[in-house]
Image (tube, rainbow, N blue to C red; front, side):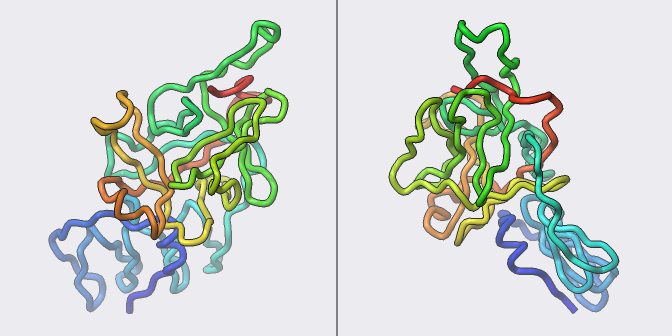
Length: 249
């Protein structure tokens, strides 16, 4: 008997798959590069480099759900500031790398870029770590001191950006809600038709540097992002006190 939660699988995103040697799960054969076997009878798909977990007949993502006494429930929301790291064990060159802010975009790997005005220094935070806070109504913002804050949003093509300090401007067609961050889990894009996050490697036509680009994948941009790899974004509590930067640049 094979069951899985389509909702959880779609939210986290399905990976590019290569057929491997078949193994046995109860009466069924399966490809371990595509599935994991639970209790020798239930198959759950591998998404973003790791198999979904199993709970009482349903497959689920550990980045969004928990299973206690065979009852599946959402993880508690992240109520304090956090940092993000890439999670995909099948992508070792990026797995565990931090999400960093620079150029008003969130990147995978690389260095955080921030600014502190001279009138505030030396009372500014270090600004060398990218930290985010979950907001109300599915919003998210950068963990900064600058008045007005810096809001996280999806650009019209679902690249992940944040607003310039002292400005609320976002390109027409951007999306600033539909995010969720979970304690001990992940940062999830809940917007309609979302297929999870993907990491896109540097390209000759793009900006030079070691950073990979972070996108939310959906039914509209999936074909153009076919060179990218599905990932999860792991939430870790920010270890500092208060804001992590005056502003991110």
